Amino acid sequence: MDSDLNTAATLTKNKMGRGKLNCGNLTNIESLPDELVFDILLHLPAEDIYNGPMFVCRKWYDMVRTSGFISAHLQKSTPHLVIHSTNTCRRPYFVEMNRGRIDITRLNCVTKTVVWASCNGLMLESDFSENRGDFYVTNPATNQHFALPRFPCEEGFRCCACMAYAEASKQYKVVIMYCKQFHSSVILKSAILTVGVDKSWRELRIKDTYEPYHTTTTRGFIHWQQNHQIDTHVLSLNVETETFRETPITTDGGRRLEKESDKYYASTGDALTIFVARSEFSWEVMRMESETGELRKVAKIDMEARLSKIEDFLPKPVGYVDRDGPRVGPVGWINYPEVLVLWVYSYGVCMYYNVRTQEISCFRLEYLNRYHRFLFHINSLVWLDGC
Image 1 (cartoon, rainbow, N blue to C red):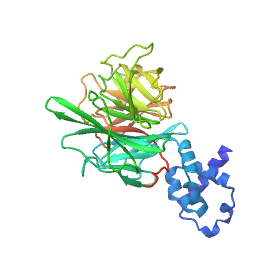
Image 2 (cartoon, rainbow, N blue to C red):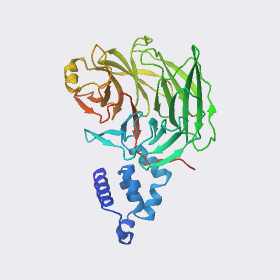
Image 3 (cartoon, rainbow, N blue to C red):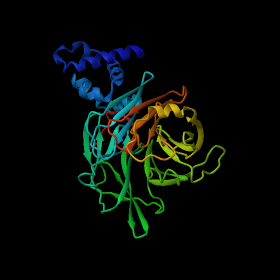
Image 4 (cartoon, helix red, strand yellow):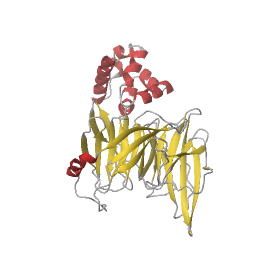
């Protein structure tokens, strides 16, 4: 059945690529059972549905706009890893697993200066080149944009923004942590906005000792990391209840983590994975269940024996390089837990490590910017009610 549906979906996609179909010749198509059409369209990527089949006939148009189809399509869509270079208005990379092979494509639309987060196919962006208080929600597959109420910011502040979906209330919420140096101390504040509902930002109470460094989104939660080395706890926000929780990072056996260990966060969509460095090229992988905060060891990744292979991939560096050699850090998963993506700092290079076969491949980014964001992303037809 699945092979038949895939064939039908491919044929439909090919027809869409040849131009808009004449609705006067759609008698056979319109006579197909709704259940069959529904299943065929589920096999098409969101951008192909939006640019083709939804305009074939009124029945298809109405079908792909229903909440039931959008939700089913979201659940069936293949996750990507989005690679976005900060401070450059360029098309991000999409990296995905396709029939056992890594495929790398470019986003069709140009994003704003910074892409902060991705949630259910929606991206949170800001345009720092024009106005630091301007944030947007964008669906890159459908090229829809929604401007959020302007965030009231002051000169000299630093912020860290993220977005997550509150499933029970069916609302998207954007959270910004921001801090400002005041004499010798750092003043930290947090604000939250329910997209399409709130007309202004609401204050969110948080401990003023936590300075944000990096954010990761999982289902219904936002997680903050302070610093690669000094962080010993995960700070998580339940966006439904708008309450914070601190979870101590423990290693295998329940031992509390030492401050000097490098740590990296990556989302699987449902859960948070934490990579605790054991050497320059080996990590203990912990998985944290978002709802309970339970941590458990799921793997150990050791690439020390492949160091010569790694160095063969590296071009000339584009920035500062540690005296001890290239610095490598995990940044995301493709088809979790099959392929781990690692970023080689200062070289503009991504590596893909197959956890089972230990094979390594490499991809050099077109733009040689040292600062990038790596986001778990799913192309979808999701949009915001009332926006």
